[in-house]
Image (cartoon, one colour):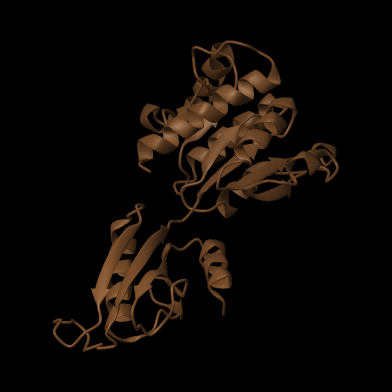
Amino acid sequence: MTWVAAVARLRARREPGVLVTVAAVRGHAPRDAGAKLVVGRGETWGSIGGGNVEAVAIDRAREMIAAGERKPELMDFALNDKVTNQHGVQCCGGTVAVLLEPLPVVRAVAVFGVGHVGLELARILARQELDLHLIDSRADVIAPERLEVLSDAVAQVHVHHTPLLPEEVLQELPQGTHVLIMTHDHAEDAALCDAALRTPHLGSIGLIGSTAKWARFRKRLATEGGHDDAVIDRIKTPIGLPDITGKEPATIAVSVAADLLRTFESEGN
């Protein structure tokens, strides 16, 4: 398997990894600069030459995975018999610099409701390295021709048509998915809020709307849903930056996206 395919496999599995690259070589070494190795929690793909260099790089890569490290790291190796190595002697005579680049699990965002605001928000979020889930009960708003504006997305976009029960998608979303609820129907929004509070593996939950709407929802979530105040407080509303007050769909979308990115930063880069 190529290293590109291995990275894609880790992403599809939503597993972290480390991309290890021979960054520079002086003198003789088992592999030339550019050789790559992908390290997962329990598997590796490719090779940077075997021996001590590869073994130490794999050990360090797995330490980085376990610690959730996000910053790249450079390791230098001298390949001679005077160096004490952890995994045997390599005496090719050269030196090797190895770059370890973490491949964290990308964040996931689910936008329920791809109307005017939802589509503008999708256009912004599609420029981020995300798994972006777009969910709507209306087939026309998620038709391929309408979503053509996302054709150059950096994000991996997943479209869900849910004509009956949009809340069923919540169980399918990846661990830690950030949920934004902004459908065309307040009853649908209410059902999604209730279902989201019953789905513990989600990340943040945001709801678009006025304070009056939230007052009604909060009462209903408590009396009919049986949720206590601490659970209800998982829902953030209104969403967006409070200093941005414009009501145009694109303006709201920029505000919501900025607020979400701030949430990402608070989780740590």
